[in-house]
Length: 441
Image (tube, rainbow, N blue to C red):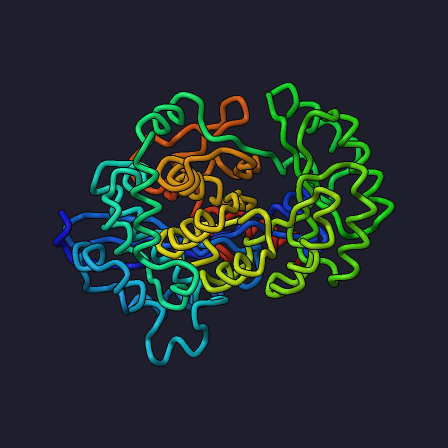
């Protein structure tokens, strides 16, 4: 089953008009249309794999072009060629002597890399008849190590150190897997408090979430201090003192401004401030972390970190207290394996970002693997959940009592319904033809 050659790779520009109802709105992205560059990979012996990377509307067409440009490195290879030397294939995608000039390993070209690799991992898990998290959990540590490109990070994590972490985590591994199958992985919700929501909508959603068992809530902040004080006060009163509150500025502030702003929100006892400043500013995050530590407020970031090297530096500089991996920003599972292992070495909890179409479906596999096979800890750990667009996926996330229940279907949970893809293709799908016609009239 691994020997058929990959014969076809197609990519679609799929967009959902979430901006119409302000879903996903924050201080920097006021009108996001949750979107994906959606990849379908087929081999000549009938294997299929589906991958994607997340975008917020305009610009998705650029990622589609990058996926098409990278497809030449995939067509003609067998799945066995790829997975038998997965780190080598990762380097092939990211290190072409000409293509790397428009990266390297960052921006649009890395988003495209993620989309393709997510499709390859989905195909591999399907062939093995396992959900991706189980494929990873069952994999021999040495085989896992061979999936990782250790270039540029050995000053923080060597291959031997990574292997030692995985070997040590074998103790209690079966019990942790059984625990996850029974209880699920703890989640927090962002769906109640997008920045564009009215107070009435916020209160209604928060009330419903509490009745459903949610105990961890994130609030978007950063546009207006007085408005944020009012909204944080509202949510803190609703959820009570015992539940957890986080705040997220989506890169809105300069460093000094972030420290001042968050200090004024400290009375609401947020566990963390997420993306307080430019996502590339490692030393700025370090300064914010140091200033907020006496207030008991940590810094969380990672959803727009380009690659493992940036995460390495964030960890080395003590610039974050919560590592927010993303299944579609860096180089897919391969690069996230490196990031999770570095986080384990530096003893920083991983709390994935999942605010976008398909991100919940994908990242749940990674965080289940992290707990079962890497960190062996749930302390200060949780995975983001947003209650949007799951109905478009064949294997949607299952939340029970505010916990992610481990997926059972083979693959990476990344396949969309054909009808959803066709209706939401931009600009010629039925949904967008209707919207664009109304705008033109």
